[in-house]
Length: 402
Image (cartoon, rainbow, N blue to C red; front, side, top):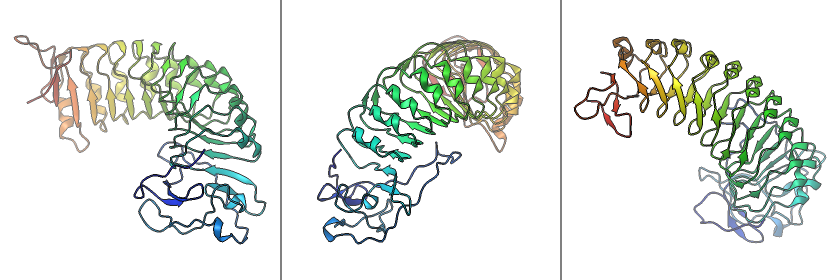
């Protein structure tokens, strides 16, 4: 790609392709998600002590994200200086072998050159938050040492190359927020070391491959906002290490598989805005580490089991716009960390107990509690709830409960 100048007050100032231009330097992101549970090992940058020609040095001052002068000298990319001194290139000390390329948020345009695969020892390729176009080079699959691929937030198109699934040392694949089309290959099962797989916010279709169950170390995976169809594969229940499973905003159908209850480490289950149906399975109530459940805007039916009281870490329980029936179970009073309980636009009935309402007086209390406690004009509501923060009419109207 090539560099494009950006406003002088936007981020850090380093060298462009021959001219001093403004580029953003963002903090290094080695962890998957924001809790640091998975970190990828970094290698030291080579310090070979070689002199740098004056014309190869950056002539502009470099600043960090807080506006402080950045201590360090980078050579211009593609300059005559040693590659290990180029901006964004990192090598292991001593042997000057390129291990990482990290050029993040620099307004880069153009395509990703397939010749990157000529770096056989490359472990990390991070080019996210740029303006890159074209397809993902099929040659990347031949880089056998590649463990971290971050190409998200660009304008890449085309399909996910089949050859990428031959890079079986990959730990993280982050290609979300692009314009990718096609399917996710069944060959995904070859990436046995994969811990993070992110394809959200693309134009992908097809089904979630059953081979996902082979990724026993998978910890975070986001498939949100695509065009996936079919059912949630039962093989998801084999993902013992899974912490976040995000399949929101697709066209998935069928029930939530009871095998989901095998995921003892699952904290966030986000399945809203699909066409899922059936009842919440018994396995759902075994997810005792669950903190967030987004099940809204589906076609779920049935009642909420009294077993919901086991989910004591649950904070967000969002069920609006389904077909749930029955009463609000009093066992919800066990969920002392609950902050959002949205049950509106369903078919619940009965009276919310005083015990449940007492939660509002606890140190860990509900911030928002929605139910269908707003009756149509001249009619009593189906749900009586003195402590709901907002009352709704089962259709599209909600009001603050006064």
